[in-house]
Each structure stands twice: as structure tokens, then as C-alpha cells.
Amino acid sequence: MTRDMVDIMGSRLAWHLWKKHGSCSGLSAEDYFAKSREAYGIITQPKVLNRLDKLVRVPASVIEDAFLQSNPFWNAI
Image (cartoon, rainbow, N blue to C red; front, side, top):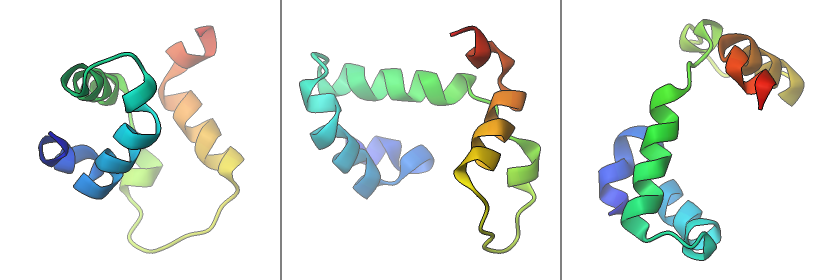
């Protein structure tokens, strides 16, 4: 099942997330990964991150702010 998630998180990360979070979520692996894909599908990645062509170091708050600006519905959660 983790092989099916390679396009959005890589198989190693998918396996790690399943072991750490998914296995105790109360969901089957199939449902956990389906929910993960659903969440991925509604998130807008900030355009500034799409344009990066080299490694940069910025505070986590900069990344968080960029995601919040690109996904204003999060502020309502």
C-alpha cells in the first residue's frame, strides 16, 4: 500500500507515517492512505515553494505562513 503513495510522500515516509500515526488511528491502512491522499488533494502548495531551485534555510514560521496564505480555510479550523 505504501508503494501507491510514492507520488506524494515516497514509500519510506509512507511506511513511517503508517507505523507512527496510522496504525493507531483506528483506520485500516487503506482508509488511512485514502484520507492522506484526500488531504493532499485539497492543500495548495505555496507558489513560492514551487519555484525553489536550490536548498534554502528559513524559519519554520515562514513556511507555515506561506501555507496559511495559500490555504485560508485553515484559519477557520
